[in-house]
Amino acid sequence: MDPISPVMLGVVIILIAAKIGGELARKFNQPAVLGELMVGIFLGNTVFFTGWGFSEFLQENPFLDYMGRFGALILLCRVGIETDVAAMMESRVSAFFVAVAGVIAPCVLGYPITLYLLPDIHPHTRLIIITALCATSVGITTRVFEDLGKLQMPEARIVLGAAIFDDVLGLLILSVVTSVITTGSFALGSMFNIAVYAAVFLSIAAVVSLKFTHVIGEYISRFHAEGMKMVFAVSTCFLLAYIADGIGLAPIVGAFAAGLILRDIKVKDFQGHEHEMDEMIRPAYLVFVPMFFITMGAQVRLEAFLDKSTVLLAVGISVAAVLGKLVAGLFARGKNLNRLCIGVAMIPRGEVGLIFASMGLSLGVLDDTTYSALVIMIMFTTLITPSLLKRTLYTPEEFRTYEREAARYEI
Image 1 (cartoon, one colour):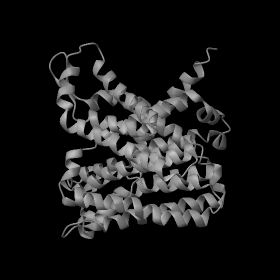
Image 2 (image 1 turned 30 degrees about the vertical axis):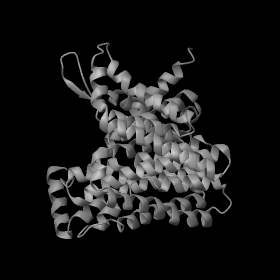
Image 3 (image 1 turned 180 degrees about the vertical axis):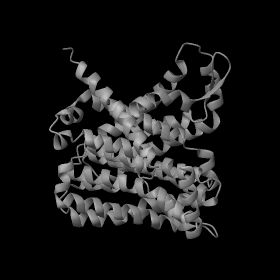
Image 4 (image 1 turned 90 degrees about the vertical axis):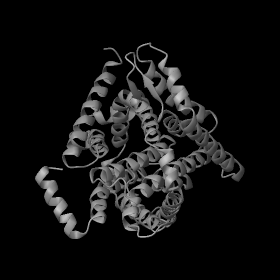
């Protein structure tokens, strides 16, 4: 048998399972990422459920692992493409305060919880757990505001700006933490240099996004080789990820910076029709990103939850994750703002939190207990946010009316 044959079968199973999981999640009005994670958890624990050995293949095959890592880069590039730097600046003061509080508060709450529940874990493991608590998934919150027709309200603009600042701050922190873990040193000079490199790297990407995208788009449109536009988008993502790794940053920082650059680039096809780079990178997104979610879900060990310490850790960090973002909402600047709504909208960790957890896994600082607890926290915060956010946007009577209309039209 050709050695690649089992890998091909594995890819087929993963992609089909991811789409089934995503479709089931949407039927229950949940983000597709939750369905893909759940399917990944099932496939990664087939021995636990059925005795079938596919889980070992899924967890240990290096080719599938590499494809999942490519998916992480494409995912962060897509997050960058969805990051509107100009819109972020409109509510920059309030959004910045909310974002900073949304990073600090979960850390302040999470540190004593991990210290109490896991007093003997390595400091690097504690760092990764706390870093993952800082994340916010802007995509899930945006979808809820959009579905309810509330994207133009001040709270929505503040949340979207804060989530973008949160992503940038989180990536800066993750770069510093990654450097500390890989070098084994807490040297302040080195940490400062990494933070400066990351800030400069992202700032250059933001400036290019605001000033030079039109010129880049016109230049790329001159090439008529088939697939040139898609190759340009994917290559930009991987090239900047490579450069970021080369200067000591996490590769996902480079992928995010690539997304910032690609966001406003528009290219023309042979017929003169205009296309955005989000459209160009979508084929790679549809293939690689589900593989990332499935392979990350597969790393969760259900038998770990037979241990009381795993359950307690999952509950503890989930409480810190929720309360930390609710506290952040209190720092919104402005009159007559629904600060509870802002805090709730910042709760979901979603795909961004999973990226942080995957970095901890790849660095070898998370074991079955800590990684499984982190994934449960990510899933819990992602699951509860849509319903809670709807309740904060309506009075009780308005919410009951909304539910009746939703049931009537199957919203």
